[in-house]
Length: 276
Length: 87
Image (cartoon, rainbow over all chains, first blue to last red; front, side, top):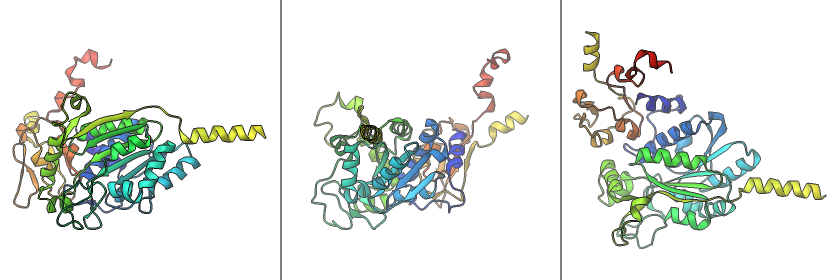
């Protein structure tokens, strides 16, 4: 197994400050490892990959990896990524975002990038809270949970990122958790290989902000929570609705084919030139 | 002699400079090989129990733990007779 760490070290920028900035036990570190393993498994060169991020805990990720990286403004990672993909379609564009980045500030960009089917792989880490800015509630904070801006309890209903992506028309939608790290490797690999707007929602944990206020315990306890509440898509088909009430499905949720934006655009461009 | 010495040596390398003592490797070790010291940092308590599954390495958020194969003779290639190794 020693190859796993060796492989990760191959893709890190060793001139940056290590250990990284995330809290002890943060799921983003596990997700970063999974992302690197999946990229290596797909066989991309370092120079072929563009890793784009917004702001937040997850937004710190491109600092540490040795790809072409871009750290953009809050919520606008997908717009930058669309520009990169259209300017140079040969590049593999991967966007990493947090839940607040993807569906709150960048919510509009997210649904319209999915609708247009731009060839971008999107990795969204859902930790149910704005971690870096102080633990405010985000659109994915479940009803009745405490955060620093909802100290009594959250009165809003939460977004389901995967279902939002399905409804917006993403061609590939998957969900995984940081506890199921090996499964996450496979799902990430499928996400990166898919042509079109592919989304993977990674259920992470924020024990520093969210876990502390809701008495969910340490990182270990929150990972056990993920283990207990995750049900694979195959298993969920055999379960009743009331059994699935407080559970979430993990695995591939949607996999379909649709024409990709930059190819269609190129076709129209050629057609218009010839018609002239 | 050298073989028996190799077996006794712990095959889990913990890089203390990067470790943040989160306890994930200790909590999810299926064989109970690791334990935490007073500072919360992991150490190899029972190296002989290690089954080389690599879950501590997979789940370490800080890439601070490495599992080397317990016994180099158990490598895939060495399982085959010498004449078949080339194929």
